Every structure is written in C-alpha cells, then in structure tokens.
Image (cartoon, rainbow, N blue to C red; front, side, top):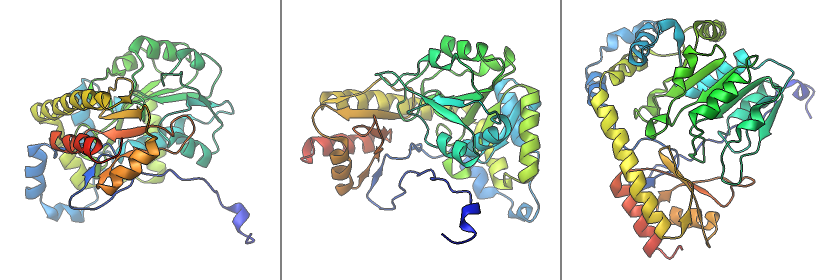
Amino acid sequence: MKPWEDKIRKVIPYTPGEQPNESDMVKLNTNENPYPPAPSVRELAKAMNTEDLRLYPDPTCHSLVSGLAAYYGLKEEQVFVGVGSDDVLAMCFLTFFNSQKPLLFPDITYSFYDVWADMLRIPYECQPLDENFHIKKEDYFRENGGIIFPNPNAPTGAELDQDAIEEIVAKNPSSIVIVDEAYVDFGGVSALPLIEKYDNVLVVQTFSKSRSMAGMRIGYAMGNAELIKYLNDVKYSFNSYTMNYPTLVLGVASLQDEAYFQETKNKIMETRAWAAKELRELGFTFEDSKSNFLFVSHKSVPAEKIFMELRKHHIYVRYFKKPRIDNYLRISIGTPKEMQKLITTLKEGDIL
C-alpha cells in the first residue's frame, strides 16, 4: 500500500446498466422510455437560443421549480430539483441520514442506496423482502436513523400499498422517510398526499422514465418547506449551478404537454400487459409490475443462460448476479416491435 492510500475513501461503486451501441440492437436493460420526448421539447430544442449558453443558469432553478409546483398543486418552497433523481437522493443521504442509528432499506432494491451509505459512512441495515419480493412494513416499525425505499420497488416492480406507506411514516415521527417513485407513473399510486399530513416524508420522482428525458438528468423531491430548505442549503454548499440552462428550459416544456405524457405512458402499460401474457406462456413467472419493466424467472432455464443467449441476438436485458435474484432478469418495456422481437427470439432462437 502506498503511504497516502490509507487516507483515501474507498467504496465499491454502483454499476450502471450496460450501454451498447449497435445499429440493430434491442435495448431493454436500462429502463429507458422507448418513445421520444414530447413534441414541444423537441421543437424547443431545435429553436433554442444558444446565445444564452454564455450565461450561468439560474441557481434557484426557479422556472422548473415553479413549473413542478404548479403541476402538482404545491407551493414552490415544497419542491427541490437536481441533476436526475440520483443527485436528489444523494443530497437526501447527505442531508438527512446523519444518525448513529441504522438507515433502513430493503435487501433487494435500488443498488445505489448501499453505495451512498458506504461512501458517507452511514450505518445501515437491509430488511429482507418476503418470498414474493414484497416489502414487509413491520420491518420498519423499529428504531432507525432514516428509511428509504422505492415504490414501485426496483428491480422487482412490486408496489407497496399506500396504507402501509402511511403506517411506516406515522410510526417513525423522528425519522425522515423517503419514498423513491422513479417508476410510479406506470400504474403506481404516489405517496405525494402524505407530504401535507406528515412533516417527515419526502417523495422523489424523475423525468428519466415516464417523460423520456433520461439524457437531460432531471429529478425532484417534494415535501414540507423545512425539509426542502435543508436540501437547498446542502446543495448550495456543493455547487450553486447544478442544472444547466437547456435542461431547465426543456424540463418546463415537458410539463406543458400532458396529452403526450399520458399517451406514451399508457402505450408502455399496454405493451407491458401484452409482453407479460406472452412471457407467461413461455414459462416465465413474475409478480405483477407497476413499473416500465418486468422482473422474470424461467421455470427451467437459468437466467444467466437466457441473458447470454439474448446478447448473441443483440437483445440486451439486465441480469443481476446477486443473492436471491441471480435467477431473474429485468426486462425493460420497449416498443411493441421491440417486444415482439424479444418474444420471437425466445421462441425460435433455441434459448428456452
């Protein structure tokens, strides 16, 4: 070991989904939206005044904050925005999880949580999902330094009902409870009404999935004004100019095209229902999903084999070589054409 090496903060980093670049590929591994952003976003991007790029962006992100507040019927001081929900969640970890008591989150969940906890030296304990990969609310009725979980969960797609979420929040008045709703628009129910009833809950969402803007990196948190102020205080201590000018402009435009938003998310849910039926007929089993992906296991063929065989056909899905889920694949919902190619390949490609 080098003499300075023991002073370095070392962590096992988060591993993002593979980003292949092939002209004929079917990319179903990173939960991206298969449809383009709203027409208003595309038109505005083409007509954007690049002269404004010489100026620093608004550090308060006021246009986007006010747009989100109006969209959800909130006050502006109840909204915090960041560079994708990952940035927002990282700020939440920094701001709210500073106890010697353990942070609680599921054992099968978004795999960035333990990375942030390790990096920031936050003690944590993973609570095991049940045999059907559902959160057990009772596991969170105990002393803790904070609680976070996705709903619908990732990578399982399972949803925790709102009564259970409220019970978790109500039983933990001394802790911040964060509900990570990256996938809620695909048939889930948001916990947003709870922020008016409880002062210890934050709801985090993103433009990356349902609004087809993963490349712009827009995430946001909603909660009571005091929590949002604390988040902004931490943000301004790191970087006042977190969101760039094009992102702010195009983010606002996306909020103004509600018809397109509803149309595309409904298409994805319809395609998900069709794909679920086809996959079950091929011998796959899985819980109902409220997300833009399916978390599947085959009755006789190992997940890793299916994963590798699909790659040979330039079809990419996500495989997690982790305890309890190493025989499962997460399959993002693509266009009907992409999902048909997946099903046809599974049927005719000598895979199953």
